Amino acid sequence: MILDLAGALVGRKLGPVWSFMDRPDDFYEGRYNNRMRHVPWGDGWLATLPLRIVMQSYPTTVAAEVRKGATVVEIGCAGGLTWFGRRYRMIGMDLSQKALQLAAEDYEIVLQCDATRMPLANESVDAVISSCLFEHLTDPQKTALLAETTRVLKPGGKLVFLYDLRTENLVIAGYRRVDPKLYQRMFLDHDGHLGYRSIDENRNFFRAAGLRITREIFHKRTPLQSNSVWQKFAKWPGTLGRVGRIGAFLTGGPLRLPMLTLLWATDATLGRLFPKTHARGMITVATKP
Image (cartoon, rainbow, N blue to C red; front, side):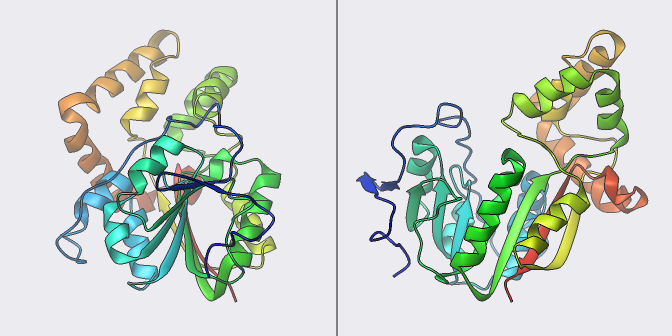
């Protein structure tokens, strides 16, 4: 039995969603409803290229690390990935009821719950994965989440987390130095990021949970950044704001996909020339002993 419905948490069924929350989350309900419906025609490099361009290498890293047919929990799943639903027995977790209604079209089980208290049995899943969730947690929440992850993973089970970092990227760090308060408001408060952490600080969380880190992938080390970053820069005063607005124009609208492709290609070819500390995000792959 994967779901621990007889445990201390009391759940109720709302359509396809099992809810373990007394009330909707004021910040997250309906905020992140993105759903990736693209399904590649195969597992090869060319077939999965669109997923790598749009979602960095998160989907393909999961596919490389977790066998087909495995039972996989995705924390902060939003609307889900159709490809994952076809490869795995997916359990999606999120705070948003609206997002989970979408994910339910592809995922076998969807749970509205706090992932620091998962309604899952001990050692019941093969992998726990997450994209852009870890940076939304306080340090105590990260510790609690990883303790729960370790509890529900089978021995030898995999963790694959993609998350943003406190970066020394030339562009982002430059804007941060000019106006730290505006940076705090736009990059942290606006998106619900409760505090970015450095590479080493994040490593310490995983190791303290008893997980063995087996692979790390670093993203977006170059000065080229995505549209969401330039839109934030556009809020800076003066010349920096004008540069931000130009960047937002060049990376948005009809130019969005070509610029995402350029960003991916630049990162893939030139990213290694920049220090790891310049990465805006990273993927951690870890194993439960």
